[in-house]
Length: 143
Image (cartoon, rainbow, N blue to C red):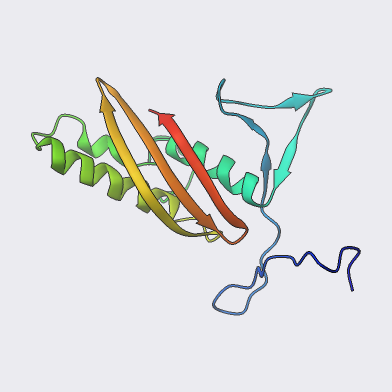
């Protein structure tokens, strides 16, 4: 029995029966798009907040742009630049790219209500992410 018996921890067992570790990422200042530091050390968040930080950073990284990341990490939106698609096709492809980028994370179970707006040269993404810890929202992620 835990310290708080009325609060249950999320089930972190995947479909193969393997237990996952608690997700942990550096805390992020979304307005300045930079990690949060305190006393010369990074501040860390866990659970749903950590998954949100991971998703935010994934959407801000072009897929295949940096050798330090795997080929699955990042947003493949670069493929839409310079194409002669109609606005509706570009929008639906951007939504598909967002879902593909976020569903790489095993802690994300689904990506819902994806909205993509083209604001001049900027792409503005809003979506709801279902994680193993609960729901998180990305509102107005500007790329």
